[in-house]
Image (cartoon, rainbow, N blue to C red):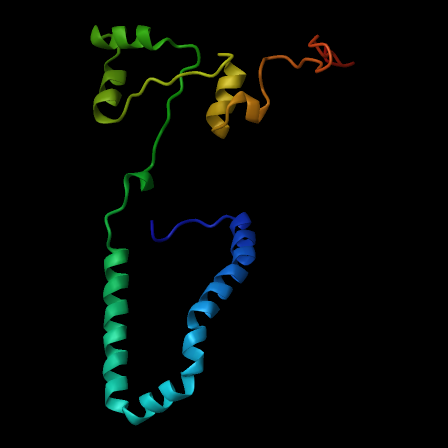
Length: 163
């Protein structure tokens, strides 16, 4: 993807990585700085060659930008809709689809995409949906149950005003 959204946090990443980029470019160009005066004299003495070289560079950049900008968009640029059925067994829905009882789901499966997903452990709604939303397992997002337990004794943590 050539053009994309840059969120506010990316600015920090770019500025902190900017020093590394500048250092890399400087280290790449350092050998040429030694010959910079000779290179300038060469270009001054050969104006016709310099003009032809500039025209070739402009044409090459124009072609590169044109080819890059006209690439076919990837499938990830398209909009998607995710239907998540909490507590629905895929065995039941697949059987009903094969019997013709769910024509719209069959049409979605044929024209779109249908995949069976594995659930989290434990397989409870808050754990599974948190994992889906964050892309992390329960050990990373910290939700293991409907209720909160005291970490010292694993008993229910009841605070005043919970009821």
